[in-house]
Amino acid sequence: MSNELIWILFALINFSLLLFFYKMFGKVGLFVWIGMSTVLANIQVLKTIEMFGMTATLGNIIYGTAYLATDILNEKYGKEEAKKAVWLGFSTLITMTVIMQIVLVFEPGADDFAHDSLSVLFGLIPRIAAGSLAAYIISQYTDVWIYDKVRKLLSSDQFLWVRNNASTGISQLIDTAVFCTIAFYGEYPTSIWVEIFITTYVIKFIVAIMDTPFMYAAKYMQPKK
Image (cartoon, rainbow, N blue to C red):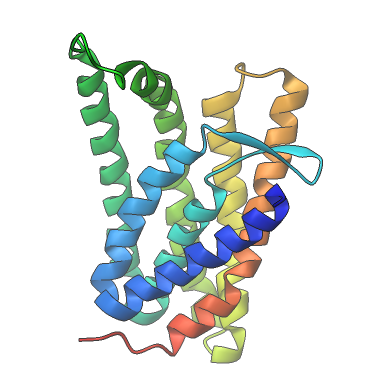
């Protein structure tokens, strides 16, 4: 199975699982999802793949679901709840980074087989996390702010797709610029860095468009009490 097909199926699975969390656990499920997706995205982003003849990083889909979750919170519960969720994701990522750096300090046992793999994976996390933290807090607040402003101008349900795509599209551009500069600039040749930047944003924008039907589904979904 090609990477392109796996990617499409992976996106549908991610968005469907988000709706499942919302249906089963309501607002709390969205808060949990945001914390989880933030951590998973920063692990997945370490893996690069070839897709449509370009180099891209993973993590864009699960990261995009965090924006969908905050948009759902903003739409159904208000801006303040969306802001609270943003800070939850921010705090979760900081906690994961601190804990895993302490884990790496422990001297591994004679029969340990995981330390080297953890070092490779989480040894790169501080720079990745720094870029992600800065990008996350800036772009997510931008997303919440834009969504709230557009909703006040275009409050009708027929403009739900405008609120969703406009806020996510602009905030994801900011996110990509901040993250790629902090996390990857200097780590790759400039041509590869530019390619990662462009493909990362294009993929994020595609994810933003793909989440529109799921946004409508969440709008009219009644979670279990």
